[in-house]
Amino acid sequence: MSERVFISPAKYVQGKNVIDRLGTYVSPIGDVALVIADDVVWKIVEERVHASFSAEGIKIEKADFSGEASKHEVERIAAQAKDAGVKFVMGVGGGKTLDTAKAVSDEFHLPVVIVPTIASTDAPTSALSVIYSDEGIFESYRFYNKNPDLVLVDTKLISEAPARFFASGIADALATWVEVRSVIAFGGTTMAGGRPTIAAEAIAKRCEEVLFEHGRLAYESVQAKVVTPALEAVVEANTLLSGLGFESGGLAAAHAIHNGFTALEGDIHHLTHGEKVAFGTLVQLALEEHPQEEIERYISFYMDLGLPVTLEDVKLKDASREDILKVGHAATAEGETIHSGFDVTADEVADAIIAADRYSKAYQAKLKN
Image: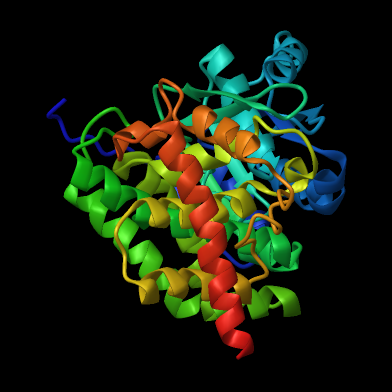
């Protein structure tokens, strides 16, 4: 495919306490909202959302999110919304809640509003959902004809969320340029259905620059629960830059490794999306030719943010070669994103997983000497 394709949400809004103006931004979209959120998130934002919507005459049909972006969850919430007369769907919360909101909106061809309360993934801006089984095993990507109509990010809410989720978002975003440059070099296609644009390349590259420049300070800001310029920059990188970059620039090995990990049983499923992507990024770097200093730059950054860099960190300390090979086979399955950036076998992926673990251990040993 020779076409270059760039896609994006219709509007992106970010700022401190901007959730108090949510009604103003959604009023042109509709006057009855199906709001999807879990109990924890809804307790945090309910009063402010109701106040903002009431001021604009917007009614709410609330749907409880059960925790997994699965086909059954989408069907359950869609059934609730069927006779409610909703004019748009709004997801409030983390990545799986937002992916479910996009899927439900697609069932009825309704506009969708995305309100992330953590900056843990680059899912908010995209025209796709990651669909899992009810047990949390990756099943497929679900693609849509358009991106969200509005993405609204309140940085005060982000600053008050657990720092672990923020670090996970940085890890997810840091994979963006690593994967996009691989897709460009390989001549692969993107999640948008075409070749990467110059704009997507520039956005993905700037995303990584912002993360290395401001990531550590932003992480400290979240630990202190304060909004700073560094936090604002990294929230934008985690959400908008990474979202536009990965979707119109492409995914490759790092996310395929993440998906491969879901084929294993055990404690690895307690890790966040970004934590698994962090190790997947190191695996992709091990698949490529990079100087030791470059790989160690990523390892050092991840360690400063408490992200996993070894097999022990991803709960696979005692994994056999057979287990690692299962990840390799899942990561190289037909249709996986790794094929946009590499011509690689499951065995080569398994070697790279073991190598990434060794590279990190060697770096950690060097720090002790």
